[in-house]
Amino acid sequence: MNVGANSRRALSAAEEQIRAALDAHWRASAAGDATAEHDIYHDHAICDYPQSGERILGRSNLQALRSHHPGKPSGFAVKRILGRGNLWITEYTITYQERRSCTVSIMEFRNGKVVHETQYFAEPFEAPAWRKQWVGQMV
View 1 (spheres, one colour):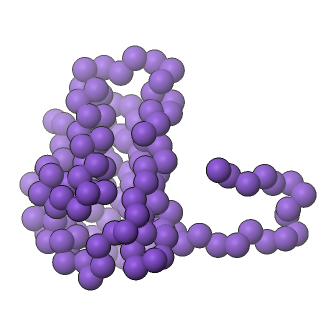
View 2 (view 1 turned 180 degrees about the vertical axis):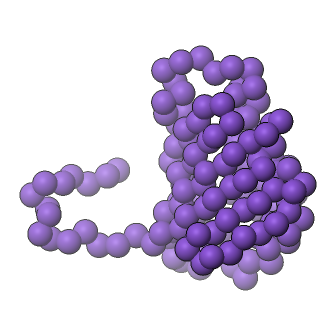
View 3 (view 1 turned 90 degrees about the vertical axis):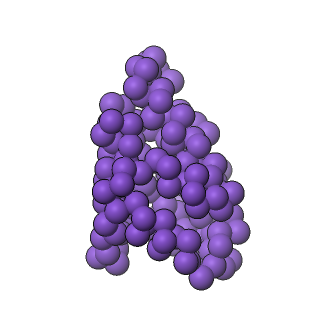
């Protein structure tokens, strides 16, 4: 996992704890460990899915929703984690039923727990030929 911008400065003790909690959260997510995955959330956390207009209220509802997903992820890879203070962003890909989704998670922490998360999901798309002369390929 890439620390990104955080490698340019030392993390505070509180940020180190948040970063360790994030690493554990994403490892548990990738492993399908729903209990460990949700340890990071405050009991009254809110999770928003802007693309569907859904808001999940509370850690127990969030864990139940994710535990009942009809397809378990077959792929999960964190690209990078960036953060400072109580605001942390993770970019990752997740694959459900052979469909890969590029995902961004924005987490707001209070007292070491996530109180608000917003997740964006986007399916990959073919780059249009007209702009090929100005772009390269991401690895």
